Image 1: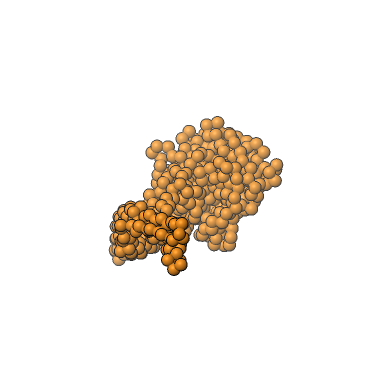
Image 2 (image 1 turned 120 degrees about the vertical axis):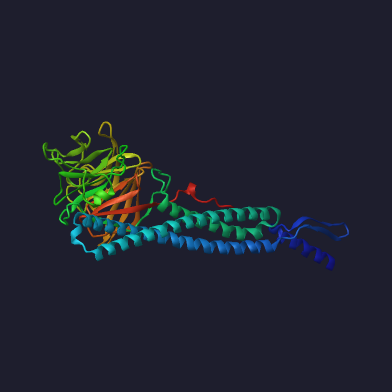
Length: 467
């Protein structure tokens, strides 16, 4: 009886531990005389717990390295914004000194020189830090790859369940590393022109360049930015247009960012003289050296060819002049450009003021496809396009705006979201995305403001789960 009980207990233990698979073979029989006999064969190898413990300790060390690199990436982003502001401010000061050198004492000049050297040192330090950080990330990637190989060997040769917990820890490290590398590349190696992402995840803090070229806070109706599809040789050009009313008359072009900040335009174009081509509502953009804007009379979309200095206009079927954006009057036809081409946003009486999105055939200068959204246009602060997806904004409070609604033209589906971002000042009258640098350009109460755009990672780009 005792023999039978012990045999039963032994067999039960084998079954209970079957997932662990420590037994390479076993059998149990009961003979006609009710005698139980059983046999078990232990594996000839012993699980190397020391190796697994070492792998776990390595995981902790790698995790600490990654946390440090993630903190560094956040710091790099903040420093970049600060350094850009310092460079812009020093550029303005130097220009003033060049224009009137006699008005500045030798002591002040020496102080400016010291500031320049300090900024130069800071930039060199940042460059060195970024290079070091990139090297560290590559090293961590190699370490994790080696560890995954070791875990696979242990898993194949020994007990899968004992290795599983450690493997999961390394999967978390893989995912954390991938996120850190993604953010690092977003800042220093953006994938310009690519739509291989899951849409906007967040915006940077506002980068304030300076007050507009008219040096007037009264010029609140305006816009600025770069050509969204520049012709060869014009990649560095900027443009600016503003007025104290919603009338669109003057537009200036600058050879580069320095000239923009210095207010040294290559040329300023007058849409009123000699011919009456003026527009209304500051919803304009420049694409392929062509200025797209809302024509004043008749109400229509217009384009001004900067090279030939000629204009033409086209009526937009059904478009109404009654439905402007929340922050500004006469913003009835809003132009936008993204990686896929040229767009115009408007509302119709038939849509009861809800925003309609039109894709423009640039060669024919006519709408080739339209989409009806469910968002009421007068409730929208502004709107822009990224990779065929419409993004609309609204106010949260005096210092905060949010992207609250998106419409994907590929799936023809709208979605309510919440992506808050900081405003420099409460009201703004212009917001547009530029695919050439993946930035948003805002005209905020007379100031040039911009934002870096960060994107969600596509599922296909996420690290493989190795379990």
